Image (tube, rainbow, N blue to C red; front, side, top):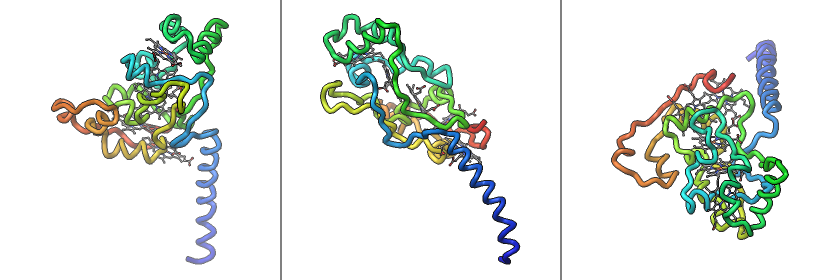
Length: 205
Ligand code: HEC
Ligand code: HEC
Ligand code: HEC
Ligand code: HEC
Ligand code: HEC
């Protein structure tokens, strides 16, 4: 390669690097695999899902109809906790926010950059189990808020390679069921692998 040719290539490369840097900056504090964030109340998924048998959609009730799944309001919590475990320090914190008319200031854990389009409902309605992407969150806080408490953690990288890999190779219902701790049945085993589109504009505005 001659010196001249080399220099004609560099501006293009710089433009690309600048665009990438801008995009990363725009994404703000991007989260990563294993990320965990302290929360104002030591919320526990396990007692609600595993013990009380609640469905994820009871609290994240927009997951099957909108891009964002939603976080439950204090009123939803108090629907039970006016009577359940009222002696608990963590429940008293929930009640204090509620009585002051304040929302619980939960800290966001999972977040893709603003320039990425991620519709929850498209995945949930295609049968992709929550745990395929969020790990075995139904076990989070299994020992209660007072013993070895670990807050919600980000189970997957949520990076582009992770998204594209599933769209190209397809979602396998048997793997999704295993991740969710659902026993395999002939019906699940007969479900086809689900692929999704992967051109840039599917995920980028
Ligand atoms: C009793 C209500 C309730 C139920 C049931 C519930 N969640 Fe949650 N979930 C919450 C609350 C409150 C938060 C925010 C506090 C936190 O992160 O600990 C949360 C946080 C999360 C987060 C992290 C959100 C973020 O900031 O990135 C995920 C992911 C999640 N839940 C998935 C699930 C899944 C999957 C199920 C079913 C297996 C489920 N939840 C069942 C109340 C619930
Ligand atoms: C459908 C009823 C129901 C709803 C709604 C509900 N909970 Fe619970 N919660 C329970 C049950 C049942 C337990 C387990 C009690 C036990 O371990 O004996 C529990 C346990 C807890 C604990 C552990 C308390 C401790 O000290 O062991 C916390 C914290 C908690 N809930 C917070 C919340 C928050 C925050 C919300 C709203 C986002 C919420 N709950 C909504 C029924 C509910
Ligand atoms: C295909 C992967 C995938 C599936 C399936 C999935 N999620 Fe998510 N979830 C994500 C990603 C990616 C984010 C970050 C989205 C964003 O930043 O807009 C997220 C974010 C969340 C959040 C935080 C959003 C907020 O507004 O605070 C909650 C809560 C959540 N998911 C719950 C669920 C529940 C419940 C289910 C099942 C009903 C589910 N997710 C299924 C990938 C997934
Ligand atoms: C575990 C597999 C899996 C992962 C991981 C996954 N997806 Fe998907 N995605 C699907 C499936 C299945 C569909 C539904 C296709 C359908 O309905 O035809 C889908 C649909 C979509 C759609 C709608 C596509 C359309 O044709 O309109 C978008 C946008 C999307 N996903 C973005 C993302 C992004 C962004 C990520 C990563 C943050 C991601 N997905 C991660 C499996 C996955
Ligand atoms: C299935 C969803 C999906 C598709 C399809 C997709 N992307 Fe992405 N892309 C993402 C997600 C999620 C991120 C943010 C996380 C990351 O940086 O890996 C991202 C990030 C990026 C970034 C920023 C990287 C950085 O370091 O800041 C660029 C540039 C990009 N994508 C370009 C493309 C191009 C070009 C295509 C088409 C060839 C494409 N993407 C297709 C999901 C997708």
